[in-house]
Structure formats: structure tokens, C-alpha cells
Image (tube, rainbow, N blue to C red):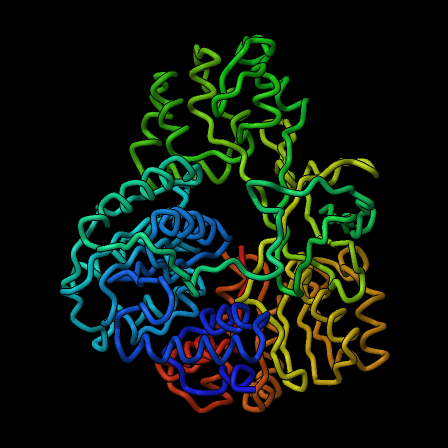
Length: 595
């Protein structure tokens, strides 16, 4: 009974630790629970860790915190925790979103893994800690030793900015670095592994360990945790890749259904699916031909030997550039125009965003060896897609809404690697997948809570999952969808489903913005402005607000529209409106899944 009520009492434990404690004790009998209770009580009083059993607690605990938007940070932190435990250290592993910031002043050893999201922003689960460290409430940390691993993408302007912020602020508060800040690009694995080894070596002089076994509540593996991960994906079967947009649409958006078979992979509405893909053979052939390279040449990738052609199809990123590749190509080509571009960060950023390897090959001639090419290219990384289904309805399937990324440059068609792979895959094709949880994009715990969903284009995907989940659970709370796309007749994704939800009352209201169906363009942010008074009433009634889709423009424009609503209908000043939306985010009532 006490354990059932544990989470309702004020606790010094994080929510994650509470959950792990429940899991740890769930299999114990009443007699065993009584013994553990007495043991812990005596341990707390005596501080010895030895009460009727040979088990000595280490003098210190290593706290490992991660802030992760796509799961990479969590993966690195889990690996570090496993290595630390294997060396006998006590570990408190937690998401920054679950960590109680006031606990920071009590820490003596802190290892942080944090990614950077958007334009130098902290990931959702790191927002509160990031803000706390920058505030006047942040404590003196002269007793803390720490190290930070920063994850990022050098294609973006504010590379590893959040990690830099954490390192600077911890140092400024008096904490001492065990190891200097390590900045990792997209191909982070090797650098992350070296950092793990270095920080654990650096920890040794700072901590005293005993030879006895240690139970680490904070880092116990979660019950039901999937055996399939980014590193070990499940080979699933593609069931359907069906075009959703009309014949005359200027875009190809697919409804993709994948069979998870007997994998027992589970997901929640709001999660993402990681999809590994291979590059098209046609694209690889184009690159090899223009570079005059033999695809049968043997090369080494990740300590394995294979043909150059297979390496380019299966192992190397061809459809997304990064600054280091452009710089290396400029040096090999000696082209004055390209050399000028790489000297300017913004020009390089724009070039990276608007070109692929095949464009580099076509426009800037180089003499390059197979080994040089392989070394310049980054490894393929899986793409994450917001899941468009609820397991409550589709059971062992998972559905995606995928827009084929397509462009034309100098008369040649260019496609996105993963989207082309999924669009062209035949029924029965193998797809390597894994579930990436997104605990910061969840339906409210109370089913009666109103929800407002803003999802233009493929951003509507998770809201299809939300509605399936609510319908399956018989939820009758109010729900409101804002959806937009160019044309009503060609681009109204899942139109019949939304109409059915409206008809049966599952969806309370829907506001549509088809931008090209009239002389002046109308977007979802315009509909938000038009419905501002009603939307404000919903927010005052406790509604949760969700945005999914394009981060570059849409999410910013919608955010500004929400600020305007708070000023116009909430009677707030500009600063008060900012603070209001920030508080909604802190309270998990304003959640984003943007890309």
C-alpha cells in the first residue's frame, strides 16, 4: 500500500527513481519488503551500508544526466552508466527532464550528455535545467566535478551550443571539469566512446569504491525495455506504401504501413519510428561514373571490408552534406568559387542545405581515390518519423506519413534518402526499424483535458495517432485540430478519417488552411489568429497545446500567433505573453515535435 502511494508524497527522488524503486520492489513478498524497509532504515541511520548483509555502499554516487531530442544522448548515457556500474560505481542515471534541479547543489560527480536542438536550443527534457543554471537561483558548485559530452550537427550554425552552455555555466558556478568539453558531430559514436573511457578514468581518483555489489536504483533497466534499438534494429516487413495526395498535387505524400511481426515492439502515441535506409543504386551509379571510380574496388568501413558500390549504397550518407565534406571537396578541387563559399559559415550552411553529393560531383571536378571518398563521407544515420498510428487500434503494425523529398537541380532529380527508400519499396520489402520514445509529446494523463493540435502537412501524423488512441480508449474530452496544406482537393491528408471523427464526436472541431485555394495565402497561423478568442478560452480551461511539423518557419509563425492571442485576448503584455507560453512548456501543456 505504501509503495502504491509513494509517488503521491513529496520525495527527494526523481520520478524515474520512483518508478525504478517500484519495479525493484514489485516482486518482493510482504516479509521481504519488511526486511528491506528495516535494512534501509538502519542504513540511513548508521551510514555504514552494512546491516545484516555484506553490502557496502560507495562513498559517492556518479550522477549521469542526459538531454536528448532524438534518443542519441540517452543511448550514450545508458552506455556510460553500464560501464560505470561494471566498474563498481553507484550510478544515478536520469533524464534532465526528471531531475530535480534543487538536487544539483548536493552533487559531487556529474557527467552530462546533451544534444542541441533547432537554432542552438536545449532539447525539451533539458529546458528546465538549462534555464535553472542560467538563473540567479543557481547554487555555488565548488564541490562538484563534472564533464559534458555535447551532441550536435555541424551543418547547423549553433553547433553543440547547448553542451557549450552547460559547460560554461557549470564552470562559472565553481565546478571543476574532470575532462574538457567534447563536441560530437552526427557520427558521434567513436568520440562518445572515448569520452566515456576518459571520464571514468578521471573519476577514479575522486571516488572510493568497495568490492561489494551495488544496487543502483537510478540506472536499473526498465521492465519491458525493447531488445531492438538504433544499434540493433528489427527487420520488419513493409505492408503498404500508398500515395495520399491527388494526381495533380505538386507533392508525393505516402501512407506507409509496417508489420512489426513477433518483435513485441511497443510504442505510445507521440513516439517516433527510426528507419534505416539504403541509397538508391541509380544515385550510386551516377556518383561512381562521374568520379570515374570502380564500384568493385574493396574498401574498409567500420573495420569491415566490402565493395565501394555496396559501401555507398548501405553505409555512407549521400543525400545530406556537412561542412567538413564541402571544405574537403573544395581543397581537392581547388575551385575558387567553392573555396570562397567554405570561408563563409552562412554561405556554407546554405550550400549544405541545398545540395547533395551528386551536385558536388557534377559541379566541381576532383581527382579522388575510393579511400579518400569513403573518409570524407559520413555514415548513414536513420531517419525519425512521427508515428501516425495507435497500437490500441493497429496492434502489431506501425503507420507513418512520409513526404517524398524531391527537387530538381540542373535538370537532375534529387531525392531524400529515406523518403525515396520508403516511397519506392515494394510490398514485402524489408525495413530495419526501432522505436524512439518521445516522452515530451504525450496526451494528457487526464482524458478529460482538452487538446489543441496544430499539424500542417505531414505534421498531422502524430495527431492521427492521438485520435486513434482517444477513440480506442473511449475518451470524450474536447479536441481541436488545425490542419493546412496547399490544396483541398489534392492535399487533404486522411480527409475521410477526420470527417468520421467529426461526425462521431471524437474530434470536436477542425480548422483548415489550404494556402493556394484562394488569391491570398492562408496558413494555420492565420486560422489561429482568426479563432484566437475561442482558443484562449480553451487554454484558460486547461487545454494542452501540441505543434508538429516544420521547425524553420511554421513552428515559429504559430508560436508568434499564440503570443498575439495571449496579448489580444488574454490582456497580457508582450513579456507576459512570453512568460505565459514558457510556463505552459514547463507545465508540459505546450509540446512540440518539430523538425
